Image (cartoon, rainbow, N blue to C red):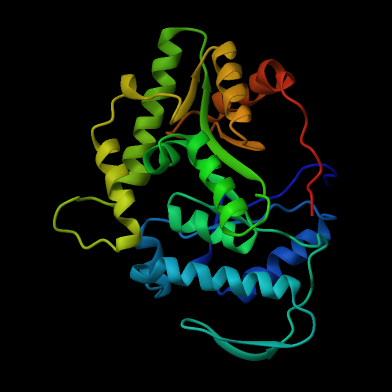
Length: 291
């Protein structure tokens, strides 16, 4: 039904799926859409998402890395191939179909440095969450800089695309701005803090220590404390100016979350329409994906 709309998960929680299934499904979608898929994967942060599938949360980083390796080989290997890893083993497979894009290069959701390093090592794209990037690297611009340096100095290749995601709420009055920030605090309480209910006495895998620090900050978060590291909230001009700085930092594309914190659907649609009418014209249209 569409000809220009790009299709993407936000994001595929790869460790709870078999990577061969994921490879087949997204390659099929890429073919059906004529190469309009942006595939993104992450390892998540919520133990409860892992438990029903019997996936080992304590080894999520290793499981995620191995799953992405299999996914990439499924899309790029020709002929039959085998894999004998820690979590997956199989012999003489040939995964079909192949994606329309050659290659369909994954985006790696990077809350942590190990995920960023995995993307740089494997020549893949990255997606940052600005508030997590600020916690881990100091700022979103620093996160992009470290990714670039890791690619160029560590692996002697140019960096791939860097994207980020932002919560956004256009506000014409202080009351509307307060509403947008209060909704985000509700979201943090429901979606993030509940995943790590206690910072004391709970066994957390070493690769998630950074997330405990994030949750401890969010636990006491108040609407008035929220900054551009978490949300684009304010006037049209403020949002334009902030996104210009994001663009300057080396971010090629921004994913916007209008629907968060139980904001009514009618308001979500109104916000999206207003963004496209008042903010989007200040920025260039998306450039074609490079190989």
